[in-house]
Image (tube, rainbow, N blue to C red):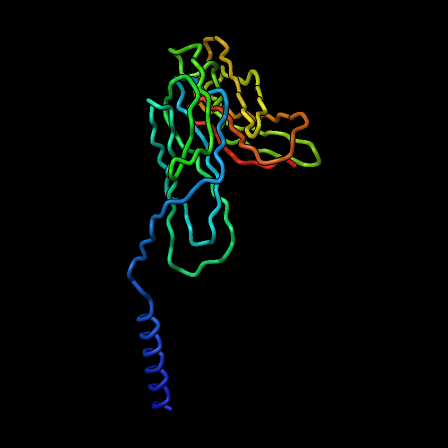
Length: 240
């Protein structure tokens, strides 16, 4: 009985040693490879004093890809924005499933006019028009509400947008929400107002708003919601 116990104990130690030896401690470094967007969404309405944002959408061939970063090289002389999306490719077991990916790219401030958007070997995948600002000394034409989240719901031809966030003053309120449905972009401008008063208090004051939309063409859209901090909320949505 004593011999059997010692044998089992030895087997347990040996088994644990083998399992431990099989665990690799060498880090796996993925390869960074260039990829391409299938489409670029370009909201209308940016001025020449705005931080311009565009959204690229593409598809990975299998599950071993992960988006890394996308750089934007701006050729101001020729009004060209060149995008260079990069992905990490891992060497593990991959499922042959097509996976969509998207990325919001901060382009920066651009001059007034029409700009081409290219990728890879100067392939043109889009264009964007930049307006001249009516108020060049201000960051935006309106005081935008600080939207933190934006949701879109589409069912049986009924479409609505739900906005939520926190005002930063007790005297701030949501005055109006303007919606511009473009070819493949829904631009939302949540306009806030300040009510003058001696009792204004700074803090976090929750707000929410639901906006019902008119009948829209079915398809894929970018929901682009402006916000007070200058960083728009961008979400790709489907209209049924």
